Length: 396
Image 1 (tube, rainbow, N blue to C red):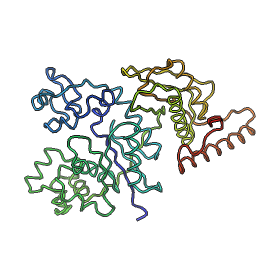
Image 2 (cartoon, one colour):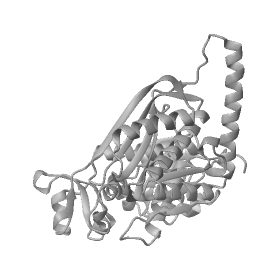
Image 3 (cartoon, helix red, strand yellow):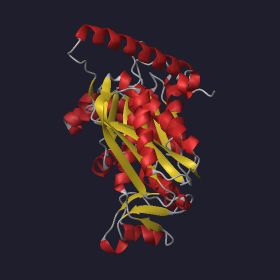
């Protein structure tokens, strides 16, 4: 049992629409779609759950979508915002584990086999963070491999009973029960079974995944060639594929969208401090330093600005990142100006380096500082962000 993998599949529910609702909260609860114009052969890229009740679906011609839902509001996509939101989610997932495979802008696999927390606890933690901090809904499937975890996510969405709003589902398939879980599902639920293969299988009286398991492997190979063997394995929930890991991120960023516009300078500075602390921890864990610090501000009218500067020396120190970000903030913000979103980011990432001059003393100093940073990070991981503070941050 110790060798059983624990894979999480995270899927951001109606992702483009969820980001549009952050941009314009008045869209919540209304039927709308992201995509092109119906009179220009536009296609639905994503649609809200209220729109889905009318039969609107992704990849559907927008003209057909409007016929199904005459009150459908059409939104031109804001793909830069989708990319930023995706980066925020993926950066956070990489805080949980470095075993992350991003398979699309709104989907990823995590291998959490080596982590001490239970799969369910991790899923709840991830979902809660993405919901509360990033204001995005997500569903999660948990299983011993990628294939079943992905199908578990889809199954959880359908079985949640939520059809007018994002399901935010979590579904677990216990190890050893993969075949039992898959058996009653339609064959089209398997990866690689498209309309043509589904039709071929139905012609052979194969309607469910369980029906596939009743056919001997050699017969499947005779019917479908090499694909028949793969299909037979998948029907039994067998999938040994490892995660395909991406290259290290070129930047790290995080942002907070406030539930209400904030004018209070102290609240805004505290938010910068909290984000800088989290970014510092991520840099330290990866043994990285950054040369550029960036701040992002969004006003109530959705105007968004960014400001950045390149530091004299690479750093992963929380106080340095915070001070640089606060300096950028004060240059961009006028006292009393309302803020809808605030974010901090760093880039120009590189492995932590030592100055060759005075090497031995600097090595000892670095080791001591690294031990202190690691100890602080470990304590905060265990007991919470606010358990330790720098003296200068304390009230008189």
